[in-house]
Length: 313
Ligand code: AMP
Ligand code: MG
Image 1 (tube, rainbow, N blue to C red):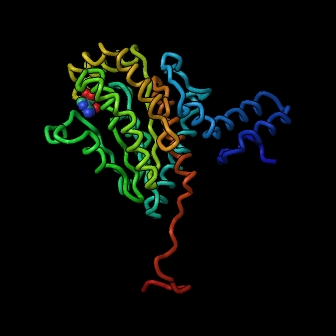
Image 2 (image 1 turned 90 degrees about the vertical axis):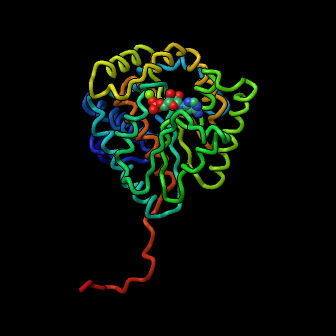
Image 3 (image 1 turned 180 degrees about the vertical axis):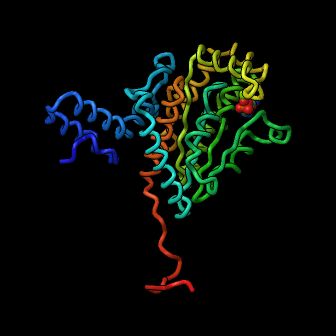
């Protein structure tokens, strides 16, 4: 039986096997430590399960620790993330080549939660060909003249594509609700509308993953301060970010409702503790890679038969 120390390739049910194997390893702390590391490295599906908002459940964000790293350690995380980024690279190439599946990734979080950083570090693994990022800003006059999904639909992925939303249609139950941009009688209808929209996409073959990046107020204070102090980050700062921060509790309540009402089998939400950027990257990379792997994308066969031994002159 291979020693746990060298089993870094992954497989869904092997964590349990490895746990059993390590029990017979009485060789001491090294073996146990190695087995634990491998279990963590391979515990992708269990990490996804831990962060998933079970459809129908009520989310209490004050009960989720934004510092949590679910047993992973920063010092040991680099090879784990590198392995998942390599999986992402391979899987996206297959998705693109196969031209069959579509993946929509939605990133939400309060200002400075790390939506941009996640795109840079995790989605950086993708070949830009076949991958689209769209950031949803304050709606333009033209966008406001239409229903709120009008500006969203053109950016959903086509076959073979992965689309990443930096903010999304969820702003309609976040900023719109908190800042009173619509009456409650209107925004409270959006949860069902959003679920119906996402169900439509799913029924039509789109896989949807939604990540809420959870940081706490102290972490946001530090990150906003860094944006003010660091000349290279100042472009990201808006005075309005300080107003938004004043509505922290209202935003959390709005996020809780969005997560609770709109985590469905068709379009699940994951709450990612994001005070630690390395863990945020690890968790998102792991869940996206596992999801793509479940789709089992295949490099297609040649479009026409290639005679054996054909050589290009
Ligand atoms: P940023 O992501 O920092 O570039 O900021 C984009 C801004 O656009 C944020 O302040 C969002 O709250 C705002 N925004 C995005 N979607 C909407 C929307 N549907 N209605 C109003 N504001 C929005
Ligand atoms: Mg901003």
